[in-house]
Image 1 (cartoon, rainbow, N blue to C red):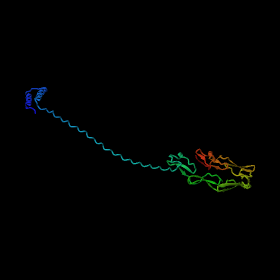
Image 2 (cartoon, rainbow, N blue to C red; image 1 turned 90 degrees about the vertical axis):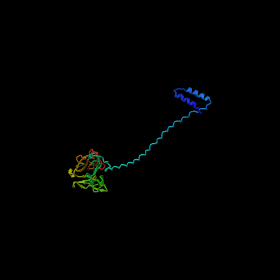
Image 3 (cartoon, helix red, strand yellow; image 1 turned 90 degrees about the horizontal axis):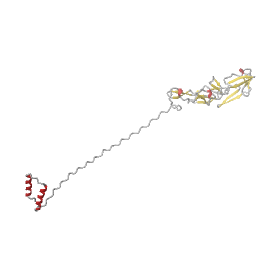
Image 4 (cartoon, rainbow, N blue to C red; image 1 turned 60 degrees about the vertical axis):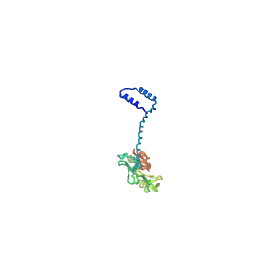
Length: 264
């Protein structure tokens, strides 16, 4: 227990303005302690500062939702087919720009795109005499070589002419009168016995008929010779036909197997 007189002395010293150093006080305190005073208590321990609060944990952002899947596109519609496969609907401004038809039975036309117009079905103008066939156009525009057993006459008075299912036969009429009775037919089908060319018949561009030493002779022009004003050719048998080879056609065309000029 502290002594009251010690405290009183301290207060008196302070009140009188006496500045006592810590050393003097400590000596006085030591002197008192040596006098048998009790053990002094240590100062109280100061309290620590309050611990700071940790930062609050931020929450994650809201997860975005995925976009909706796009719808698949619809397939394109197919184009319209060409009216004529051979031309493919080629654009044009005139028929001259269109491909040739390859047949005298149809011809190119232009209506913005190329096409063909079919001629009326039926026989064509150029025919070979006495071959038992007939060239004619079909309803589809094709050139057809059809059987014609009525086409037997080869225009020779010294032959008997018949057709059998499209095959011709020209049998010589030996010793038959010809040239209006002025001549006779020989074994080759020639009319012999004459006095003038006119007794033997009439010549043509592809056949020369003449009376030679009392005998009618027939001379056919060579195949490919020109006739009909250089527009057709002789076939070598006395007939004037459209063509025998490409030389009988214009530059645009070729001679077909039916001896008809067709576009190249």
